[in-house]
Length: 377
Image (tube, rainbow, N blue to C red; front, side, top):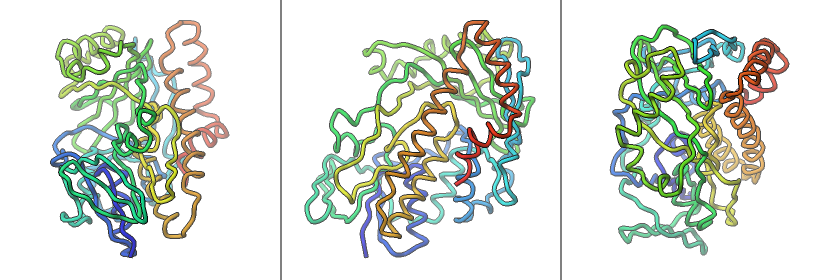
C-alpha cells in the first residue's frame, strides 16, 4: 500500500483525502500548519458545475438545502448608478443533478471533514525540509520525520512546500490589488450581482437560504514593498475603512452601512507554472497556481485538480501536469481579462465595454467557449 502525505487541509487537500478515503488503495495523512481549522467565518464561495459534479460523487447533494443557493444569473451593473448593463444565464450550464452553487466556505470544509477520520489530520505541522531518496522523507519543525511514497502539496498560495522545492522562485507576486471581504444581510437580489467601477469591482451573492450574502471587492492598489510586507497594515481599521469609502464614494449603494465583518487582504498570484523534478511530488490547488480572483474559479479548480491527480495516480498516468497546465492557461487568461475589463475607468472605453457585454452575454457561441469549456469537465 502506497503512503501519501497531503500538506494543507484546505479545499483541495480535503477533497483529495475524501477520494483516497473512499478508494482504500492508499494510506494517507494530512499535515496542517495551523492548530485548528476556522469554521466560524461566514464568507462565501462560488462553485461552478464542473466542481459540483465531482462533489456530488462524494455525497454533496445531501447537504442541508438551507445551506446552499443556486443563483441562476450574473447581473452586471454600473457601480455609480446601479444601472443594469446585462446579465448572463448561468442555468444554461446546469444539468439535472449539477447546478451552479454558492455557499459559505466553512460549510464546504465541514462537509469535506465528515468523511475523514480525525487521526488522519495532524495539526501544528510546519514542514521545513523534504529529502528525496528511495522514499520521500518529510522533516517538520517539531523534529518529527516521516517517510512517504508520494507528496501532495495543497498548502495554498503561500505554499511552504513550494518554497522548499523552488527556493525564492516559489514565492508569489503581489497583483497590485487588494480584496475587501464581508457579509451583507437581506440584499435585494437573490442572484449574483457584479458591480463595475473605475479601478474596482465588487460582487454580492447569496450564501444560504437565510438571506445572508457575501460581499467581495477587488480594488487596484499599488503598494511599496514595505507596505506589502506589513501584514498588520491590512488589519488596521483606518486602512480598511478608507478602501471601503473609496468604492462607496463611486457607488450609489451605501456599502459602509451594509457590509459587516469586513476584512482586508492583499492579492497575490503565481509568477509562473512550476513543476517539481521529482515524479512523486505533486502540487495542487493554489499551491500549483493561483489566479487573479476575477473569474470565481479558485475553489472549483482546487477540486478539479485534486480529482485529476487522483485519477492519474489510480491509472498510473503521467498526464496530470499536462492537463493542469492547459486548464491553468485557460483560467488565467480569462481571469486577467475580466480584471482588466471590469476596472476600466475611461468613459469612452466603458461605453464600448458595456456594448460588447450586452452582445456577448447573449451570444451562445461565445458563452460556450468562454464559460462552457471551463464549467464542463
